[in-house]
Length: 213
Image (cartoon, rainbow, N blue to C red; front, top):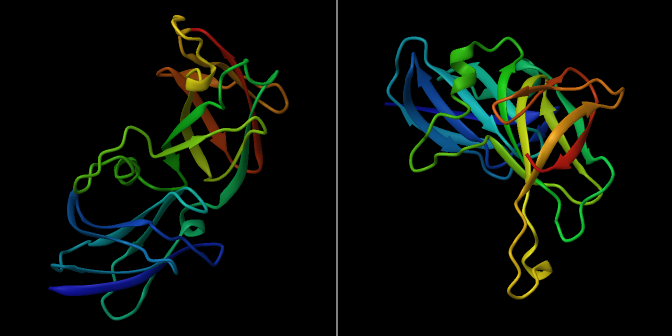
């Protein structure tokens, strides 16, 4: 068995609570989580082509990848795959009365030069964890600001009436969804599987239109 140590960062800032996966071929050889300083240690059985992949959700969202090295601390940097960029989501026209900000769900489709196999590890179940989205964040009336790695992301948004806004005995209205999404210059985003495909290659602003499907 071999112990591998390293650190996960984005622009030199540590990424805590990142999941670090040791992958050999298409098999998971081990996994660990980074501490508050972005550091990790995990024990694995040496295997040809062993690589480390970090699933990052805090500070910046994306994947970092590097070959496993026994002798040195492994540096897993998001920008080595693709740089993260600021992305801001807002709701055009404001939120409907009684509804909180929508919950935004995001899944990476393509990131930098990562292979499709590596990107699929973003959503592979590990241990007891199995997520329907890579990242889930609640928007406020002011919007939501994220750092997303350059590439293509799928996202969807859904609103449910706040419990304190429900009248006694009243029938709850149906949930609302993002029924359209466009960039700041008015370019509409392509629809996909009940959501939208967002290309990220620089600072990006997205406006959502909320309604019933």
